[in-house]
Length: 291
Image (cartoon, rainbow, N blue to C red; front, side):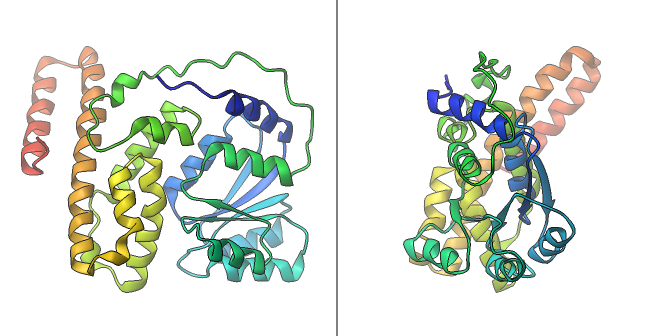
């Protein structure tokens, strides 16, 4: 069973001292939106989201923020360019880079462009909290420590996963099982029909970069390692291995989460409706070789 560390519990209390702070997230991936919103839930921090750097710069000009979380790899304008534009108007607002790239030269480059800090994806909740606490002034005293309510969803939901390391993924998000399930469902929705072969070079590079971080968020260690070592493979071999790895992950998610929902729904459905859905799912799993 996952237990929140003392460090996390203490940070969760401290982050509430930033209640009322307004920050900007510039990020194009919806799953990363959900992750950061989930991690800040209950903190009282107001999160504004821009889906690309151009929109982010406009939001910055039209609003007052105390910090900006800046994704570096975006489709219209990259995070470096957006940071340069913001720095021309404001030299003091903290800008924190978000990137799946964690080499020394990557971090150094963010500093050269005027960013204050670098958070590596997948985002670790403790790193995020510590960074916000470092750069945003406190608005009030942190509340006294309270007994954390136990997450209601049982780990049994994820017990049958063969491709995902659940405990590692939950550690990154402070043991939040509801958020983890939401991340899995969004990952399934956004990537289950993906076709790498149909992408142009820029789109492919951006997609692989995004998946490098998300694979760690869902606990897909094998997929994450493959993306880290992608330069060791030919393009054809890499894409083939990715498609096969993703298929296994999607089968895991579908069988564990969707079937659990069916069990819960049985109490409110007619027998013929249950049978029809079970037949549909059985046919789906056979067609997709999810057996």
